Length: 136
Image (cartoon, rainbow, N blue to C red; front, side):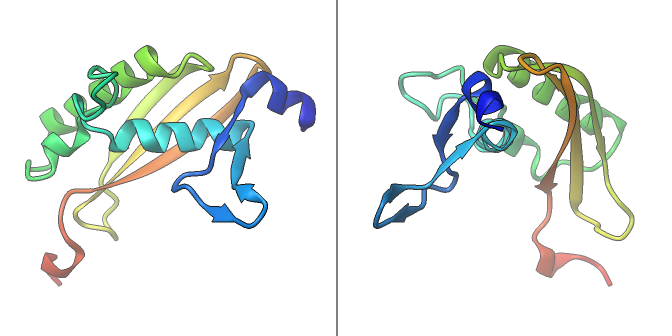
């Protein structure tokens, strides 16, 4: 695992966690997954020195779940990864609303880690509605 960490990098855990020995660090594939979390939850323009960083998924929070919305989200995720996560090669992005979890979209990202040539799968839960307002 140490060799893989050298290829894939290391970074602060997200959210940042502090303990007496210092800041909690993530490495390897876990660092890539935390980077995707940050990328998907950052609005475009939110970072002053990197205004093009992010995915702007929050624009879609109040949209009706339909084919157009799913295509829009897949494209936003695809573009964000292609522009801001060079450690991976994107294979496929899917988005679906599971029947048991109304108001939530599961965004699945299938990718290949360039440095190790290993395939991975990452699922990001995107909440379109507050859990208290869902029909029973």
